[in-house]
Image 1 (tube, rainbow, N blue to C red):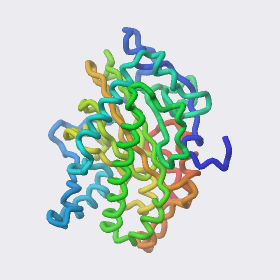
Image 2: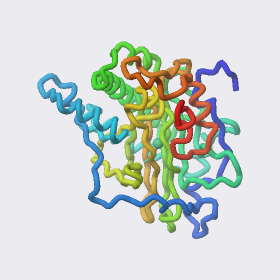
Image 3: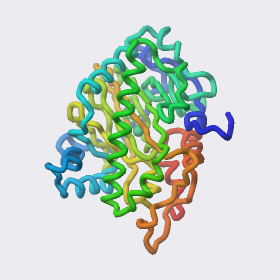
Image 4: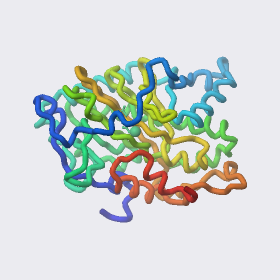
Length: 356
Ligand code: OGA
Ligand code: NI
């Protein structure tokens, strides 16, 4: 691992674990997957709050422009840290193809998937991350992690070649997602009253990676977790559910709230780095994934962060007389800290707070 690396995925490592898709075939479930804490925080009832829905067309199309929508976007980022984006302009064919190719990849026999298995000491590839000890509890999921931007960080050894369209599909999808994210940065700057040029500078050479999550069904679904509670250690995440099965829960008022995704909506969330950059105005919220007894679930999370040498410090317009809330840290150091921990709520971000 070279300290000169500009590749955020070279800043972490993880122990290798069994393939969960295979384990799901058997009746025996190892203790390592049982999570007594699953029910510690109560689950919100089905008709409690609904995640805000933001219409990108109402924010961008001069004929439809709706000033209230910008206010709603700001509110969603400040109070929820999560929203669903509709009318995002990504063609349906692109979304459908992405979902399709992801599903096809996970249907391949294990041996074929393992051709792009993570290598020891790496987190790119097919496997699992955030595993640091043999005793640690494990998530009920397999993941495929890939660097997308900058393109020199792509390690094609880990990009599936089956289905044959996978690489092009992912490339097209990620470029379009990147454009949506750039729009959102501009709108967020407007909402926050931040100089748009400063926002642009922070994200000029932005990095992008994906984590494709495969959550097999589990006969004891209520006892396991697909993804441990965490906040995302980047600036902005875009999540697409690849097979219309819900399972993402976000923490709101100390309850877990299930996100009911609209078909083809993108689920956007604020990450830790954006919370730091906005001096706590926008919130990086804890979330987790639960498991279904009958159905598998697939999702693709696309992560965006500033180039790794960028220093994370709040926009000056957002620092009031209380001063800065977080230590100044480079994107690289934050990523290193984040990967060094076990996924555990907002631990990494908490450790950056100047006053506790
Ligand atoms: C993630 C994530 C949630 C999901 O990959 O960081 O939070 O529903 N995924 O898969
Ligand atoms: Ni996440």
